Length: 559
Image 1: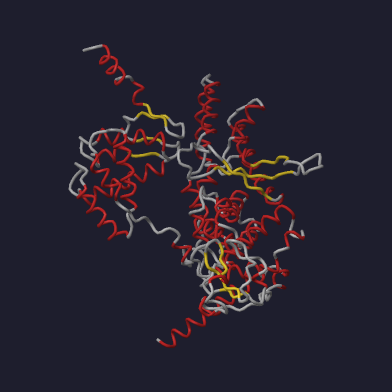
Image 2 (image 1 turned 45 degrees about the vertical axis):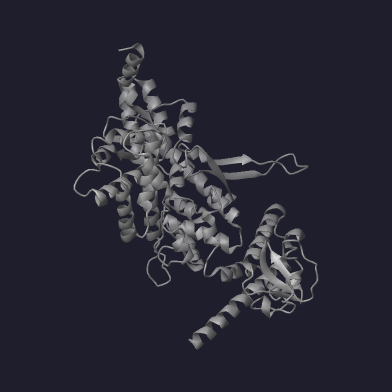
């Protein structure tokens, strides 16, 4: 045996060679059957080992160990479910003994038949790709090549939003109004405490995920001075809630945050909750005889979860108190710091989600059919996105406000909404100024280019970002190279097409108006400069809907 071999074998038997540190900075011994991933949730690896044959177990475990350092608990749990479903369908009488493409074809067929999608296979493919990338035995090059060629059907994205599902989709404007009123009434009557009210209010007004409210700490409630305006010596006071971001691949717990700018009144709600949480924690310390230095107490208080899991805090305090009473004051205090900085004292996203359901059930808001309204964090997120779309905001801006990383998911709130134009109408007609311009359009709506005056001449065609939109009856070349001239919609010679991109143009105008209002104020003449144009475009959209209804009625009559 040479020296190199001796060194390698020595490394393999080192006690710490089995120690894994997760992306959440949690350490565990991989030889155990239960792996704590984030300090709150774990992975039953013993069960996963039993799903595969002994020959495949080393490759599976090595892959999972590496995955723990990169991925969230949710991703690892998806691996577990996908592996379990594959064994259930393809190896019902025992453990998985091999990975063969014929089994995966059978698996696909069974998944589509049972669930209508192939999400389990998508997660299993991800696991096997990582397995193969780690050069662990059991997964062939041919298998990975075949799996990568498969176009897998995922769960339909945004179905509840696109269909405006009455049970799972966005809440109506009326339902949203009633919920806000019922929440305020319940809080004033003492039916909700500050923690319950603020949690419901946070999700209702921001549309954030439960994983984000679960990760909030007291130090995220911030009051600071903003940048001063030109010529001013002092900037305005900013009232912020620095919300941890979610679903950021490779990010550790609370690695990045995105601040929400609150009004002073809204900020008072979260400020009151922060002080309530700090006071309750200090009382628990006092009860156990802790007398900390002000700096130590402040450091612990700042790391407290805004929505704590109090049983976990009490358990840590009791254990630390026993160590302190045993003469280990330094290590006891360190144990408090460690749990405070991590996830140990935080509620799980699932617990937050269930708590929200219970809170909204308790306020007894009724839905459209007279039954109690079922409200979840997901429905509130859908509702927020839909409300932003109704205000005419762009997909990029909606993505920012909902804390998406890209605009792809936010596009579902804009695309294919059955009531989209009427919702924009409701949003716009709340403004008396825009109502005044509701009939500013003076042209003629046409079903198609063939129906327009001068429609035979392509030079009269008006486009918007490459999309055909209208016809100019006067053949005037007064347009932009690739955009509808702002004067067109108020011109008597303008002939918008029935299927033109009018809603898209309106959203662009409304986004511009919203930005100007933020920067200059609602009463600024610059903010109001497009109001007449916005009213004219809205009038065209209303005419389009009326014409479509007329055509549909005629078609049904001829059927």
